[in-house]
Image (cartoon, rainbow, N blue to C red; front, side):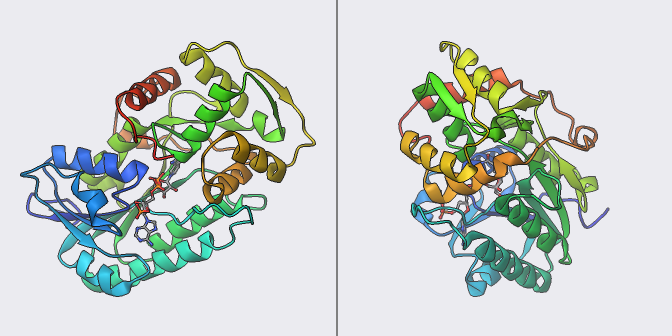
Length: 322
Ligand SMILES: NC(=O)c1ccc[n+]([C@@H]2O[C@H](COP(=O)([O-])OP(=O)(O)OC[C@H]3O[C@@H](n4cnc5c(N)ncnc54)[C@H](OP(=O)(O)O)[C@@H]3O)[C@@H](O)[C@H]2O)c1
């Protein structure tokens, strides 16, 4: 039996368990009876994720603190890496997140190598490397390369916008379309994109842990439709039963200007919104669909994904976090 195959007694570490993706993945792994450990900065935010009777340990720590990582990685078979450092509300360009994310990934790998970690599963961003890739997408790719450089076999999943209540990109889309019946948009409105439902992302992440053949692979994940930001906005309005949105292309609007305009219309912190908007110039579609051989699932349509997100938002306050 390959040492990469997870056994019943093995424990799995989740980093970023309090995040949009992490908290949903924790729920799924608990349902799958996986023994868990979460390393979180605020344990009170994690304890509510763990139902009574689940075998899940919560440790307080931070990726910037190698000592807390040593404790977190002790005796761990596989780890999920679902962390980024974008955030804050400064209107000045956020220049620090890439350095922080690079340092965090390097800390993780140096401790993981000593601890004998077998696998790491990371969710990063789609987008082709090379000139013109935004700082955010470059940084996501850099973290993937660092995680692949360690002794643990890395599975790198790459996704575009994830459709689900509380996801930063999805909430930006939701506020813009809900609040603005008429929009003027820059060139990025015609960039091609392949959004994916959050539940499908969770199925792929959980499925990769179960299938050791995904170890060492970089796999693109996306929904069944390729759209543009414009058709995605129209599709959101349609799924929500809103009047058709009038979207006027104004190619001379710069991404920086559109970022300030998003600050006015949506509550998404500028430290996240600005790097995401800069990335909208980059086409983010799947180039390789092998994930469907490794983890076959029935993919959710964009419309069903929006309906599910809306149902979740209606089901209680505080889901979105914004
Ligand atoms: N959302 C999307 O549409 C999307 C699309 C494609 C790919 N992805 C990828 O999915 C992954 C997860 O993103 P997300 O949307 O779930 O982000 P998120 O909701 O902002 O969550 C980020 C998580 O990282 C944790 N974190 C940040 N810095 C940390 C540190 N120094 N030490 C320990 N934990 C730290 C946060 O903890 P706190 O709760 O303490 O802040 C939080 O749990 C990222 O790699 C992202 O690139 C997301």
